[in-house]
Image 1 (cartoon, helix red, strand yellow):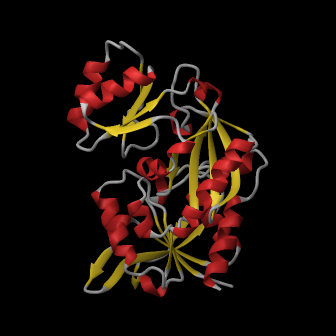
Image 2 (cartoon, rainbow, N blue to C red):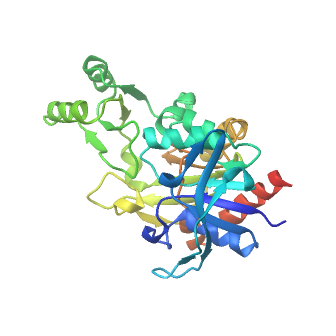
Length: 313
């Protein structure tokens, strides 16, 4: 089966092919003979009832710095594609949300991965709150009294933006921390929405495991170990990838959330687990495919395309 595929992503010239999951998906699509086209989110338009974009034929090669070639742009109705990969990176802002509204108009006639309505309705640090029994104690708030009550109960906490990404603005706050007042003021001015306050898990120094689920089933995992002087394990923040296996608790987490992911059409999802505690469910543009392959893990890109092809057959 040869599919006509469009990918909506940030400028392809800027990506690091060695770690980019979107690039892994494009390589696998090309290997299978699918016709791949490319456009950036700012080129997406709604003209009457039609969703259109100037798309360019795309070929890719696994060579950093010389990893793609583009053909001429042609204004195209997106409903003419079999599949659209929604792979733009956060921030999950109003521009991103608008994208989901536009792509929702062509799905499911054109299969959008992930389902744009579910992406919009499942912000990564809010959707996870559907599973409090799998999480560390967590508060979503910007109310000072509520935050102080939570801190008094749980001691050291992590504070981070509700719609943050890539480990930006993640802080550990200790009991009686003299920086808390300034940090609260900074968050209050910087972020209009509530933020996340979560009991600090000291075991994060042993790693923050990224687990990939494909159509609700475990597909692969990699452990991300933070640098000695950093709280954050994100690889873009200096975290180091390590091979890993799932614990029984982590398999339980996958089995518990899998049906909800399938029901929502969230085909490609990355969850974060620290010491058996689920902390995030990433649905916008999950990463980890290439790191998993680097350490001899499963071919997650192949599993994703197997499921996409099955849904298009």
